[in-house]
Length: 178
Image 1: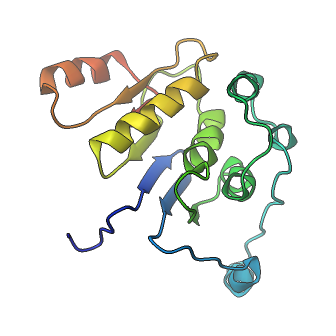
Image 2: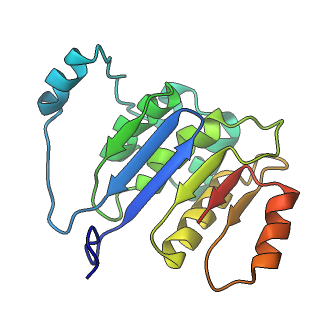
């Protein structure tokens, strides 16, 4: 096992606009109360946006809300409720949640909401540790953006010819997942 790698864990790091989010699903569940982070926030004069109760609460664009209704998302998971308002406000965030709790939507939805639809250049870069996770995250982003015209998500990973991937990058993709 490599240093810094836990088998069975999912790690996702995404950088976009001013938002950075990194999630690690631990091999053992850990819970941290919000109160533990209060001294950190107070020392840095950080306000914590109010967690959302439903996806309509914080002004996600209608095309994203439409997809959420179509795929059956009814209420945000805890990680989504906490992360979405923070990232929509343009703050950096580190979050942690178990596999299957909706981490991809937690970081992707607010970053996609902040993307400039008039530009075709790369605005969101998502880094994953495996090809399989890159494909999974790219597919989720493609699903979320299906009602955004001319919006492109491009997975980049090993095992494919560089030439094909470079041509796809040159065509333009607002989201690159690798």
